[in-house]
Length: 450
Image 1 (cartoon, rainbow, N blue to C red):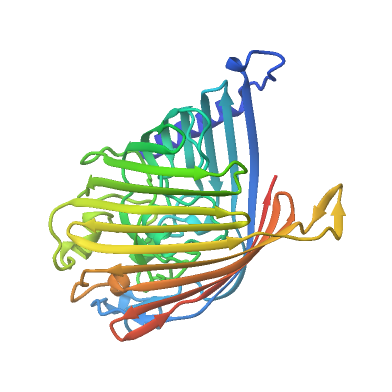
Image 2 (cartoon, rainbow, N blue to C red):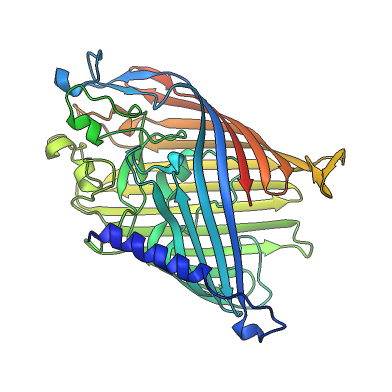
């Protein structure tokens, strides 16, 4: 049995055992032995409308390596035009035992927007699966008493923004911390305000994907056939840290550190959180990803058949450091992130800023005792990536070093508790070798959580 199959099978067994655990109230048992369980399902339906664009590729593809009717290589919008679709069904389960133990499992079925990195990726994916001892205080929420935690499994990175107010992702969150890692993490509260965190994990492999809703198809089985017709087009990709596909110790772990300061007034309505973080690991010679015959990490950076490497490629170190800033002022939420990354001596950096406002609506309609349309929350996000390295003279991925900026503008309407509608527009602009390019997209999402 392959390692990836073992990991997913063991994960599903653990999830089933957790769901089957008994739930007992505090009245029946002491707090130290009380089980709690919160199990939800989430379904997302979308209307997506993507601009149609194509950008030339100077790689010497043979005629039979190109789709029918195409005379030269091109980067094309993943799936242009308007589309109605269901993107995912998620099972989200949170468990607790007593005052100190907790666990979480999140399983996605047919997650079309998180296919990693192609449409040939698996249909069932375990996004999160971890167990934790202790307390990990939420951002900008100073704990009343000192605490600590140790977490084991597959979990999000320290710096990831888990309270996004749009369905889309910015360039920085796509490139550096969109996907969970696998390993162990620990944290310590130094009083109410200062905190430290550390992790030893597998490290997400370096690959490429389109930053809009769909990742795009590159290196799928369809490309092994003459004049391939993949399910979707290549997209206009950026470099990104892909999802962990299976357990692989490889060249060694990734080490992470974070330190922060958080503050809140007595009401909790005004608060901020500042955090610095850093990661370091050695790149693998090659990492196999489900759904593509391209290898990740150094294999990807050296180009097809290792014949087209990025200029200046040296060593195997992958390092990054960054800063997070969160602020809450009444119904205004602010988030900012800066990341500097060096991959085998290739440098790039990214910035991301998001602001959202929550406006309460007057009571006009009610359904079963609950207000219909209780609030709206507009949001605006700006993100940018700058690359300080050159492309190979011949490459199938000319967008690899394009400097890119993205505006995401949208509004979320709460219809009923657990049911909301988000409409947003992504304005992409990047600097190609021939000038400025765009690849914009509308996304409307109906999300239902039960």
